[in-house]
Length: 407
Image (cartoon, rainbow, N blue to C red; front, side, top):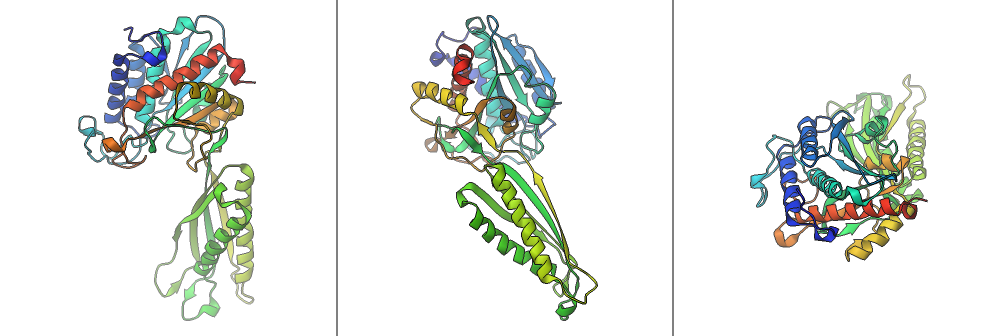
């Protein structure tokens, strides 16, 4: 049972083997968002192996705690547990652990996240007499599917009594072992929009009796992209149209067209700016295409769905973690550029201070080069023990010196 030396840096081989086996077990039986029932049981059973009791939260999630040697702060460590609707392809590495569930795959590293956090729990359980306070482990369902599981965890009391939180994500486009993060906005908000443009249909040979919603949509697409680019620094957002639908025949002007798209930003101001641009342009286009004498007046409906918010790393926590990690590792980039991916870990950081960081798994020498969400995605499993070390370093340092991290 006692697999570890006193120093984290000297974690013994059996712990690494254990977390690799756990990662492969999770990989074989992936489950989609809010359907992680088998995964939930495997997590609870894994915790029981070394004496920790886990309980359900947010439906298919798991929560557990390890208490130290006396009163003190509480730090939470989170892993997401859901998989993606992707049919996995066999590679040079995965033949012994390829997904057994047709059309479902751990293509985003969540199997690795679970194994890493279980490894942290096992390590810290053995060291529980050496630190004050407690560590809470959150195995969260449904990160991949909006509205996500983080809000349910919070609503179910998952952050009650928590003083700080930390999480990580494995990425296939970052070199093995490299650690990336930054203070402040680190991941973007996700926002989708759906627009219905209503005109007046008819035959293309009589355009004077029609108001063509396709032409209106084309104007909107051209003008919106140009207007957004003029008002917001292009490095601070992504914006685009992903779908346009309408019409039934080549020679019939339809009554209605639907246009859908998405945008991502790093602050609420830019989000509001893009919404206002769309609304203002639509109002202008409707006015321009209105035809005096026609009974039908063109109109539009604009609906914006706000997804996950901007993920903002706490400045004090991130600075303290950066100082610690730079003492331990040479491959730390604490001024990484924010990315346009989104994460529901952002909800936790709205309630308690903490940080989210990336760790790389790309290893070209081993042929591990596919990016997340690829049907051939895999990880260099040496990343797992490093993830355990990083999270354990941060947790132990925070518990002993919380005032350095949270001010």
